[in-house]
Length: 185
Image 1 (cartoon, helix red, strand yellow):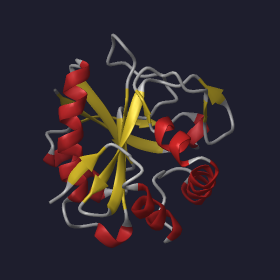
Image 2: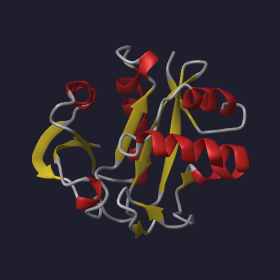
Image 3: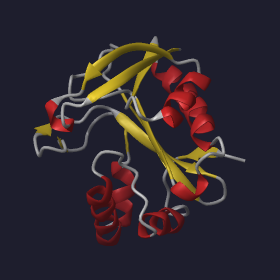
Image 4: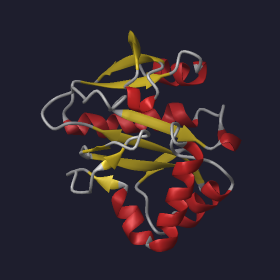
């Protein structure tokens, strides 16, 4: 059974083991993000976990891939769990609006560990995260995926997503073409 769990000390050893196997929860910063997370876990596991759950956006600024600092949005991360860490899914938003700043690619992003892909984990994790997104009161969420990533397209479409546009990502992410999907809540 796949569920999404709030990151906690009891789950941390399994999550850390996935990082140590080379998995990255960040589809943009990859190995750099993995190294940063392992260092943060080593330095202060409790602070690391607290940073993953910030629905009031009390944490510090966020560094974009190009190094630019931007204000943190309210958001939280959940771990995809089947008895062990199987991935990560995050949700972020702006209070009072479904709109996102140009540097934020979408409301929800996910990454499944390679050894558990093609089992429906991402589809189920997104379905569960949509329940949490509804609680915030948004009318819809937007999720982006690269044109050459049919696995992500399938996950989004299976959860009611509709393609709304092709666009070029913010320069901080390389300015490459991407697809924006919308899921009505």
